[in-house]
Image 1 (spheres, rainbow over the protein chains, first blue to last red):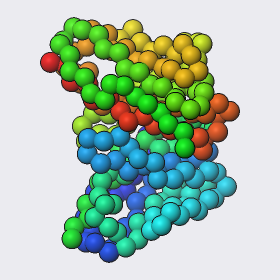
Image 2 (cartoon, each protein chain N blue to C red):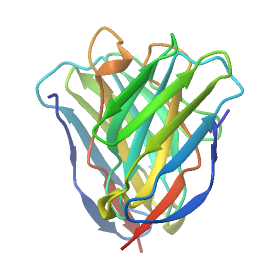
Image 3 (tube, rainbow over the protein chains, first blue to last red):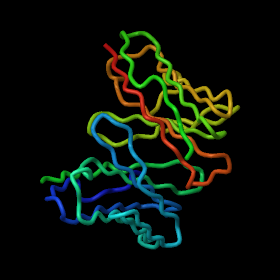
Length: 110
Length: 117
């Protein structure tokens, strides 16, 4: 079953923060986050594995609450380059098979 | 890092023809690859799991006779869209997993934009 992402869309000014949530109705082994620009393939951001991980890369970080079957992606001090559609992909085992959420469109304005 | 090459990047074909899309793992062996389809402004929908040396596993609602998958070697999976129709126009993306099935070694190709006239 497809995970649910929220919000569906968000508009920010440069320098503002955003949080994107991903919720699943199934127990999760992993959560993957990707960003996709229009007409391009998704670009990998990070993977979180069960065990309640938190990860960060520059100003983008994420958490994974295994019990709640939820993950959140945190974008701090957003830049124009952060604009795009963010997808979470959830895996219920270590096979690499992912089911993607419907996406969250982020627009960062100057 | 590992690279997955997908070819072609875009293809335009006439209705009724067949189109083959290749997905190659360039510097690692992949016993398992995945094929996704993405319609404009929608999410990536898993079509099938491609297993080297055996039949692909298709997701519910995906016609296996229309979307032929062949995973003949550890570095190549192909998706053939047979008798393509305009409704098959979409962005097709493959992903490959390093042997061993570790989630942290999942890589995506660059995608193929298919337009059927």
